Amino acid sequence: MHELGFVMEIVRVVDELAKEQGITKVDTIVLQIGELSPVVPKYIEECYPAAVDGTFMEDTKLEIEIMPGNGICKACNTVFNVLKSNGACSRCGNRDFDVLSGRDFYIKEIRVPEE
Image (cartoon, rainbow, N blue to C red; front, side, top):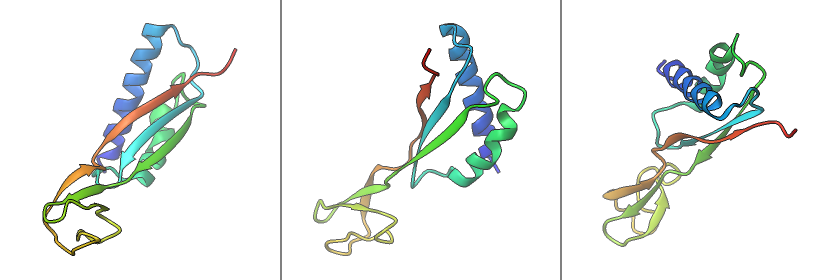
């Protein structure tokens, strides 16, 4: 399960940023994970409590947004969701496509409590 390594890196990045910005409390961390990413959102959620245990982010909420895995057909230029169409163009059935989105995994937002 490589998700634990990803979560540990997220905690490190947020901690570093918080120190640079003088932030002492984080309310929510929002991640965006693409449908075609090798990262499994469920495992990220399961690893998160252990990764923040004992840190200043211990009570932080985690939100995950799933980004669609879209491709563009090389035959007819139709944009389609790769997973929903089982890897075939929804218009012509061609399986030769370029991935446009959905491989990403990143921190979208770090929310701090309102003062």
